[in-house]
Length: 541
Image (cartoon, rainbow, N blue to C red):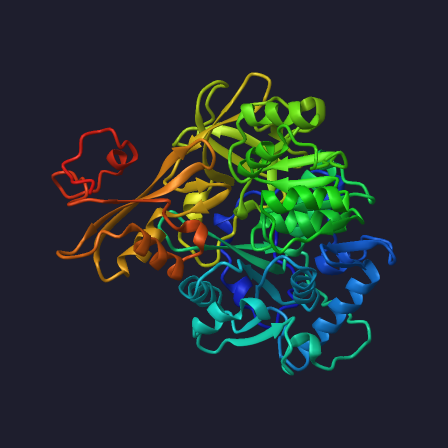
């Protein structure tokens, strides 16, 4: 698997824009289950994971879809994609909408047809959508009819948008299509299957390219060896399918095991608890913030029945030991903590059952290896903080991005996290090693928020930092300098940012300053903004 294979892509953009081979991480396929054939279509593999009459996708208000029904719907969409819509293997197809079976079916159809899925969040605004389409050269989009507005307002040149789930005659689900099976594209195991975008510390998103075998590898490592799913499991969770945490936990893992998933368009703590009880959910994926919020609803109340749960997975931000113990005390369940990355598709360090040590993330998942190293790439002794470096069957391959050299060094993926490994091999999170803000499981780049603020006509300078918060891990705090005569109206500024960026990136707090703290050479002193008690020659307004 070291060299490239014959691609099925007619549009070769994705493969042409992979990083040079010398910048790739060293991949490992030590486990027998990771030795995939040269020709592989991951959608076809997932669709064949369950019994034809077994449920695969559940919703709050409709009968479950079976594997056979899902297969027929995927085939119908694939026929439309490659027929009437003119999609050819290798084309990038944007997918946008809330978490529903139809979004998942569109994702599977794109991959089965040999195209490349670019799934974005339904929350993303026109500016963000235009940037993604520019980077990935997207010319086709399938969009939930309820989420069309921002995509159409983005006015992306050459983008053909096809809605689904609406009443119009051009709707994807109303168009005539063959009722015959669709033969899966003869994709190579190393053909790009999806491009997942993640925030960069510079503010420009990074496209992470993952191939067909990667999609199966995350199921055959973390899910198989740590999670241990069963065919009778019902999965659910809060992360949307635009996040790889959600894609794995709500689609890939259950389908690989022949299980089912409850897909919730709204999946906050208030929706999760009654859904768990009603649908007898057994496997839950969400962030520490949600577990803390659900504890508040569970304490002293018996109306929320969570007795069906057997597996609870936490990722997206560090899981405090106090949250782990409180959840165990209230529910009897041990949360499976984990760290993953969009660059590596899913979780690569974790532990389950008796192997869990609260306050640590865990140990490398079977199929993965990890170490702690210093800035020069040399391993450090146990007990010494350093940079987390990992490698396994999946690795970082950015889409035409010079930051590849920063993330991959000497064959290792450098995640940007500071960790400590103890003498028994357990990895404990210390902090982020870069300026990424992690709030309630979301990665937020301060410069991207700054750019949005600077598009407001009253703002002349902006600096955004993360501040520690007991509930969310960190919150986004913006420091703003206005032009003379500008209105100090934090609510108005927040409302403006929400028109430019997904709402979760909006500052929780806006501090108005007369000037930003800088060195004598003009360099911004972000450390002073992170420590509000330090003296600053500014007016807090």
